[in-house]
Length: 253
Image (cartoon, rainbow, N blue to C red):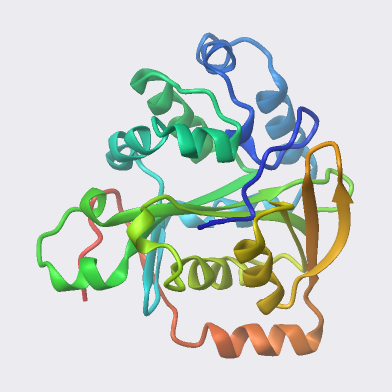
């Protein structure tokens, strides 16, 4: 199931994967000025929440169904294999990248202050197999982006469960709930109009539809975290543990 991860066009920071092309990656690696580097610079210069978005560099989150770990170079080969899928390319409006370009993008995402990216691991598999690598337990990713230079309290959230056998089991829901505790007070999710399972999932998480685009064939759902919503989120995530993380050092409990 794809949740909150649908095509948008240039001009929207959220959905970085959805319109990145191989040439854009080459421009970044070659040091050319492009939209991504300029936007990141503006965030670093003017937004206090940028520091918050970088907290996941050394943080892992342990839930009942998922374990969230920072996206590192260890995860790139599996991610690269996922994105060879024509289905995933269609759903994300992505063009295939070379493995070298995928590594370059991973480095840029890790360094950008306007993005918070975790790889989603299957917690049951990860905990049941001592010595299992994170790559072997990967099922998707979850992302949070600062999307409005004028409003640092607003972020767009996306989640991808790339492994078909892991969809519809609540992994995406728990991953999103964990990300909703990341210090922002307003969240948006852009979802394809025909993606009813994703829309229902976000509505169960108290998101409400605020807009619809016939051009991009998507709906925008929003959650404003009031005091009562904050209490509800705390209740829903009381089981989630935060632990320190170093590349490749995550070990099952």
